[in-house]
Image (cartoon, rainbow, N blue to C red; front, top):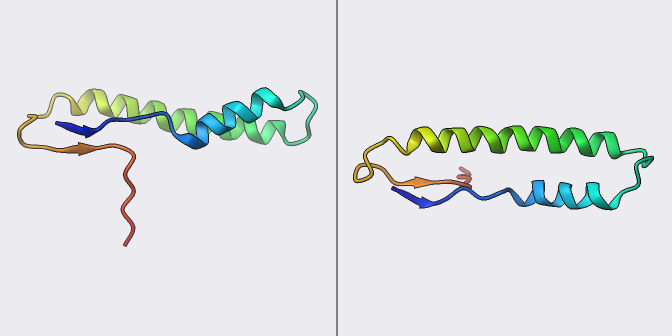
Length: 71
């Protein structure tokens, strides 16, 4: 069962907003676009994983997306 579903990462949303507001000739625009591409790739990978996790028995598993455990 998916207890905490996947959402669009806040950093990706922030990069989208920043990209919309910056001029095309801004010197660091290329770095921001690269960051967006990397974050989109990671998010799309997590969406693909969610599809496959839906085939697991729901009574045996608890799935939490967007959770980082630090030791």
